[in-house]
Length: 484
Image 1 (cartoon, one colour):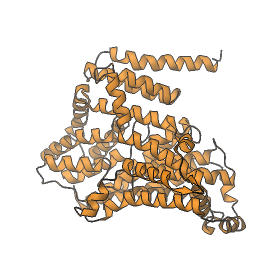
Image 2 (spheres, one colour):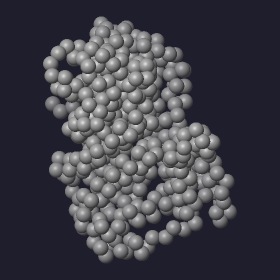
Image 3 (cartoon, helix red, strand yellow):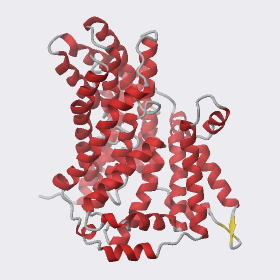
Image 4 (cartoon, helix red, strand yellow):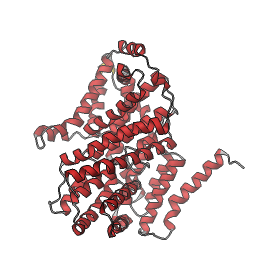
């Protein structure tokens, strides 16, 4: 007998609650008693996100985390919503809605879409969007890039008649999140790379230092290859209908170009966007230690976006403010906000010393190098790190892995810099689950355009592609440039 949708929902709710509140009653398996309770909240969170929704399961999990002994419920909720990423997400969603309301997104979308080179070339268009995501995310932070590019793509899809639920928009939007996440792989100053580089230098007493140029040289080719392979995956694995893109005629594109005009309202929005991007980019370009770099370095993403929204509220056009927070508040996607708010404290709890996760991972990874071909064992180590990062924050995995790598390299004669560099990259291409990456998880929260099933499909395929490129491209480059 086929169960009714209401019965299936109730079953999912029962399983979710059982995992969240009862998993911790099981005997500890290498974790502490508190760690088992935290793991139950983590597993329940993933189950709730996958089969129910993002908002109310996140609320329940935050409260449940407060009864594991990690912190009080009030402290957990305060930690969730005081996180800079959560605050920034709320404001950037409002800013994205403003860019859409002002008409700027429409102008940018039509300008990009109307390039004559895209006529009859849907896969060139696809590759251009994803390469744009990679390059811009490398220059600034990937989070605003995902939201801004997604807003432009929504307008493009509406303009060419693509609807929510179609395969092509889903896999392209998921790809924007995945490629933006991959940009962290070749950024020595961000993501998992910076904590790993610092940890390695500290444990080695300053003798093992990974320089920025070497990391970029080794990682960038793998990132570019990942983009190309993901485009091929969309075309030959997911196989969406791209007829609406393929039928874009030169005449239609010329008509789009002729109608482009940046009015005063759109111009103000473009200036605001330019100022925001400049505040994010200039601190990385100016000489380190200079007065200008230190001053601009105070403008974190949240500070910059709050300042810009405040100034926009002052500017008047035709007697009215160009930005109205209430009018743009509809752009806040609370699924995204609650997902991020819940994942932050749960991830911190999983990483806490009381949970006992670090010793467990230490024992698991350390046992790999008992013997055998070191290259094969190293590849297996990279795969294990990548899998472990699907369930714990990549910085946590890196900080656990670095001492293991250092000790192993001292006993085996392997180069700690080369080995560590590869491990950092392997942890950076983990986005197969909502818990693996904050940026990659944004695709899981986009139920309207992407959907949970397609987010998992894109995440798993993208993860496999990224890890394959690290092993097939970065590993040989490390052997060539650094040695092992």
